[in-house]
Image (cartoon, rainbow, N blue to C red; front, side, top):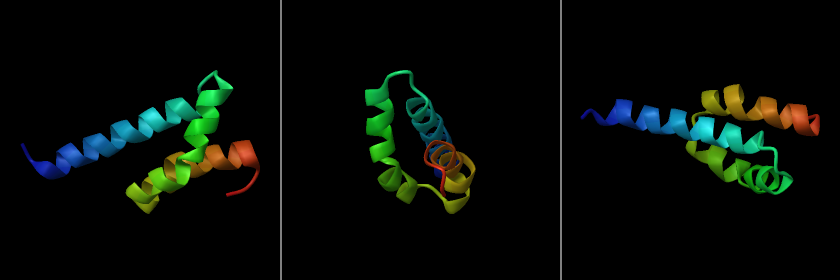
Length: 64
């Protein structure tokens, strides 16, 4: 198995999971996920952060 595609799949799946948590119906889940955004974004490429994380921050907090 090639390591690069496996890592890319892992990052893609992680971004999707984070997005689901940020949009969860339960406030406690959203709050916990939002508290982890900075650490989570550190493992992402800047491109993935801008595409998938910052739009949520902008929509929910009015800045990015």
